Length: 350
Image (cartoon, rainbow, N blue to C red):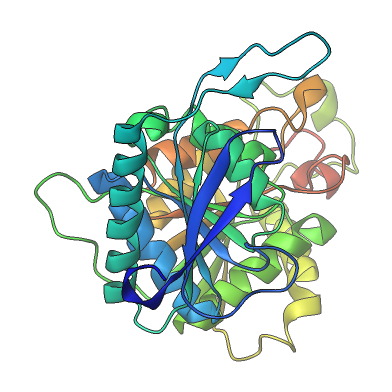
């Protein structure tokens, strides 16, 4: 029996890595060790500590389990012919350090969110590989914006970006507070960047649910702008109205159309729609100044769709002062916006 009444268990990575040791407080879960859990990557750094605090509180709000994972990023060792590569076993010092990191994280989580069922694992894989594997069965994955050791590459733009672009479940990237400053005070607001129409369904459901859990208002923000150069031929087409007020009104209608299926289910969540003629990335980051959570989609463009994030999502991850939740958008159609509402020259940002 592990210290504190936690049972020790063992798992094996699907990638053929060495055995991962783990602990659990509470009963077994159906569907695998992380089924429906909030999963968080830790490395003992202050940044991962902030992510852990957020994840523990999120697990409490959801009534979910918290899965703490530490990645060793062990090098691969070439095996015999016709056999797959295997990872080198961890040294005794590496194993001791991993146990210290995980035990410290579990104690911290228990202090932040008493009563939350916790479990842990140590993966031989890289941080992104370990988290992506666990994301298959997690309700949510939480990472810090930078870290140490195997998570040292978790500077926004590398592992965090990869997680946000590839994770099958929502990913939340938690930035640390500015150096020397205390954690941000609660704002009581969730901001979601929306396109409008059916493209927002998953994002809206997530944003509404997060707002309800926090007793917060929800702000649905759509920012758009006209291209710098407008073809004079477009202005000669009677059906295209380039009046910004007209386009803004049409975009608002489209956003309202997208949120209509959720009005009754989330009638208790105060909702505000904002339509701004501005660059989406900057509009979202500015709105995030007064938010507890920013929710954006990860729709990629062109032949790299699904491999990289859109520019708006990347900008938000780099500059938003609050945690940013990224959801992969589904569907390959063009993003809704003024150009689909009678303003073919308008260009939505996002």
